[in-house]
Image 1 (tube, helix red, strand yellow):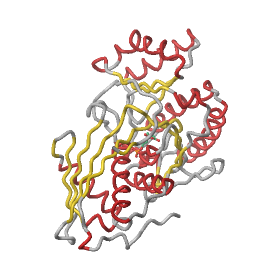
Image 2: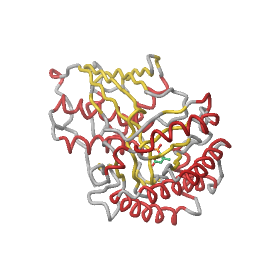
Image 3: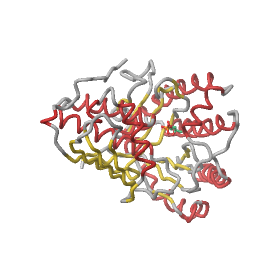
Image 4: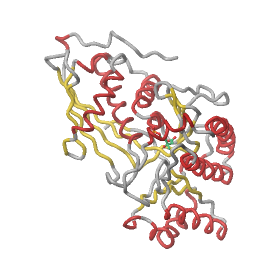
Length: 362
Ligand code: PMV
């Protein structure tokens, strides 16, 4: 167990100062999914994700000394320039969780500005990018105030840990290319409390992999991820599912090291459909796929059969389809999307994305 509680991270009142920190942090797409959690945001099974390049959140955190330290947190929050008191409240609960780690959170006044690279209502979950961007800012502020995080490895680990407390999947956004989160006996250094980088281990083909996101619906999800994780607790398939996720991750990592795209694609599709099957088998049951999600899946499978091009689909906890394929067929796949899939996207909207280099301090 890692214990980051540290009552010493308090600033002497005459040394309190102001500053501004900005980080840009990407979203990620899990291939083996995290679905089901326990304790304080700990995963029921290990997962692996690709760090994206174009879907990101940019967050600027300004802090300054504050007079009254006993009160609740002093936070203002703007999203794309507009004040968002509801989000400020969410950040307040997050800060409450972090207080044993960062007692200085109450000593300062916080002004946070955030924006996403993708449209707000695109139905793309932004918790991974937004929570990791905020956690990265806090780690940089810790280092500015106390000089205690100059080691890059320690910095990344703590940023991943703090991201996880905001949103489980955010733990994986801290690293370039690929990241594993959750203890797996067959992955050295893997841990339930923070994610680890996995980009160096995989075949080069996977470092330039594409993930185009086809926006099927922009509506808010009828069941949130938080509620979805919760429903796994009484899901009849929960226990075999967690074993299956372990086995699939083990097989996937072998395939990714070898560069076996077909095996990778089969596991990616099986995982996406399993995630949605678990939702359908929850009590109460629910569906997040739309008719157009199914139509796209059928067209992708038909196109693959016809052309032998290795293009596969994945889904997050929502109706949008992620198209996964290697760089060398990009000039076939983009026309395929334009000619055969775009009519199934809401307002013809889709996002070109690919495996990215991870967060960046601006
Ligand atoms: O991080 P959360 O609590 O939003 O859960 C995300 C779960 C999935 O996106 C469906 C899968 C995953 O591993 O990212």
